[in-house]
Length: 216
Length: 271
Image (cartoon, rainbow over all chains, first blue to last red; front, side, top):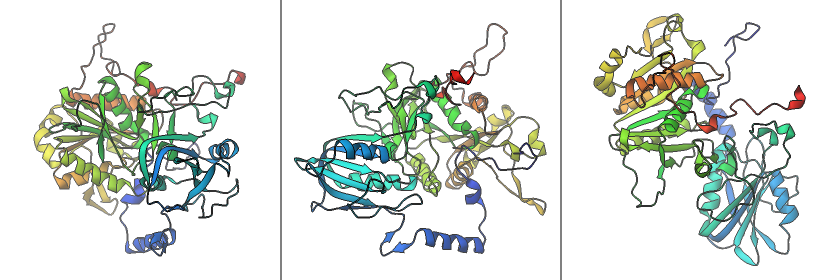
């Protein structure tokens, strides 16, 4: 498209697929360059490729029996759990997610500061089927499905109820009135039809949506 | 990939044998997806399942086609399948972009699902960058169609009757050699890949696309869905009684999720 000053630029498309780079015929030099970049980005370290997620459990059981799973995604939700729920008397750390992406890296240590990026799993000592996850790191879009499969794949689901806690900026909330006059913070919920209990807040109205790991 | 909804009354997966699969390409202006929204909303189609896939960015929200409080609480995700057996129509709606490097696996899995579910044909709604049109394409209709060889035999004649224009091929090496022609659909997302794969796998596929630009693409969606309707006759065109002409948007129902597409209300303090 031509801009106001007359230069032609390629407009970013809402379609999201930059197929130009995929469709272009590759010369042998292009292929070599692409291979080198991929080698650098997806470096093999033993059997593990850097883009892959590792879920490390400290408990001995092959799969954890789980009846309640509370997941806090993002720094605010993770801080909420740290402030109001977690303590070292009632909860024990049982696992950690190790991942790397362009935005953050987590390690396998369970001794973390609130400002670190981490993803830890806890178990309620008095009822070991109650699990909790604090995920303050950003899980990239190509890692979200992996996270899901690896975490839920380690669980034996026994009448499992999952609660996901997350935050979004008020500016992203779509409403007829301006968000400037909206009293915030406020809670909204989404629930599956299998969830029969009372929800503690109104449901999220269309056209609002949730994306990324909470959506996954 | 396809997970049927549990509708009670038996666990049999829905049967799409002989159905027409209507689907969008995630393309410029999201026109295909908007047109699909109009089809699902107007025909009040029932959700019969979804795609469990790692190829699309995850998203979830409440029912985008809600008409009342009661039906507004059903969750909706990024790739869902709706059906209308009375018209032998199954519709796939895609609501988020592809994850990097995942569009090829998605296309492969989709086409193998089309074959295994024995759909008779696929109709793909898409769009292409208007600014990439050549001089001839700038004149006349902005709508184009493409048919795979198998479908050409069956419906090519109908396209000629409707006076539709086939998507032109462009020179592979413009300026150097004008004899080698290739299909080029800039901004069309997976359109070209799905079409070429369908050609080589003997799948009957039609592509209906509109040249457009990013912006308010609701009018483009209406134009595309009316184009589709000329052929498939999904709804009747209503003749407006006041001026005896057909309003192109009157027979389509806009879904409730199209509210606030361009942002919230303005703060009164601004004025």
